[in-house]
Image (cartoon, rainbow, N blue to C red; front, side, top):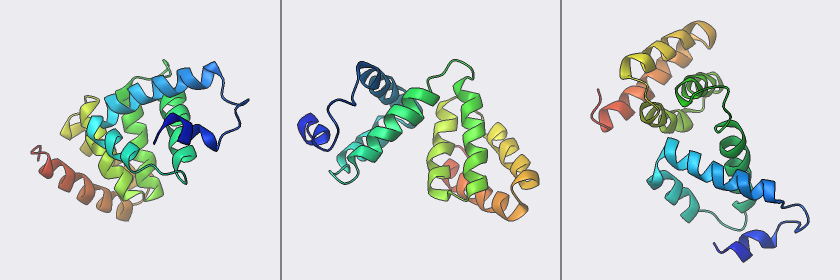
Length: 143
């Protein structure tokens, strides 16, 4: 999608230099955490219908939250894994298990995070989370 196509649906007065800084920082963080292949697939699948959503995710989730100095990426990964288990977002969990490894969590640490979710998110949710994580870790040769 070209910049013109992407910008066509946006209020031109709304996009500020701050938005562009967030977009650039968000893209860099997203690539560092999720990997180039994932981000490239997401970009390739972006349409005029999903462009504003992808931009929102890039600017706010990645450019605003994941780039804040208050927590390191390891900590953010642990929180994200827990939130995804709590919400039952299994496809996103698989993606973020890979991200957690990329952010320096060990397989054992991921297991500890998921074990803790059994207490706070439910045993059935943790059971599913362990199955998702184990599949991802096996695919990546880590388990």
